[in-house]
Length: 422
Image (cartoon, rainbow, N blue to C red; front, side, top):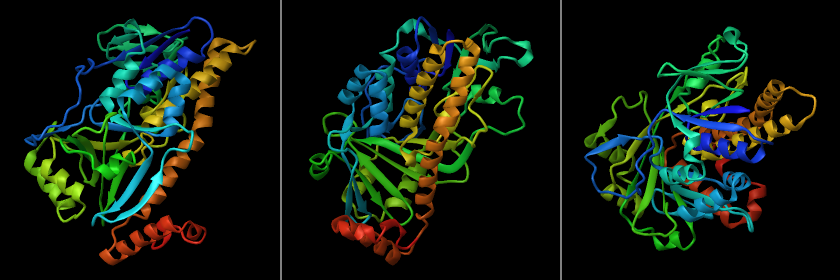
């Protein structure tokens, strides 16, 4: 088979690893990427807050929960090991109030189970990229996709921005939330598949500040909860040195319109959201905040299918999530594994044509993955619906419920902390 993957991000590269593992026989897989790779440099904190960059795809940090790490191990144990060597493995999430009160500690690693990682996105990108031969990655912008059976084509065709074109047996769109592949996949449908601005922006950065001892000793990520906002902070490298990453989400009606946001805007926004918080490390972030990245959060509307005519979507191109779910990377890895397994199994079935095998795998991917993704999104929506703004006393009662049920486990049978004042 001749297969094209559009997009050399984490979704595209994990799909390459899955195809390499699960497809029988000799198949040629090429990744097409429109942008030149970022410089091979480490991410270091800075105290310069002159401007804030709107994040590039390889910027910032990502979390890879245990389910994503297990999937990555299934795809390539060597890549899994390298990710563990380059990131920060944490086993718990520590919840605190904005007053500095410890609420509870949630375990994220089961005994004997896989780890959960926090790391620089660029380090994760570099790790997967090193596992792929250079001649299988081509820098060429995709302009248009024509499905098999569309315009009389017997195979899906990619038209490139340089005027050239090529046909393939399968085209996989792993080109993110603003997917070109998705746009052309539904060009003959009446549904609107354009990305939707969530009216939220993420803001995060790297800061020269030592990880607190009580956090480092328990290998924790900390989430500080306030009245109508939250902030997280964590190590992001294997050794807890004098740097950490921090992040937050804020509401806004319009996405940033510039590549850089003025310092005054960022400083005022941070002070407005967190200036009266008493948690000492949040105050440290406000004092030493590095030039943060700001990224508008886009989502993808629910699609009637993820593929047709030899073209299929994976990762954010199919189902971009908000970052507070914490599952974007892991769900992309799971898409990759599922597609590789389904396609490999279909190709091994006797008496089935290659195009029919592709169609079977594409349909199976949507049918097997949609229920899981829908459940994840539903649980997150329910959690967010309970996060409405409360007065200070209601907020403290909720925090008390979290605290008391975390210390007296028998109460959990009778009280669900986040439902107390829903």
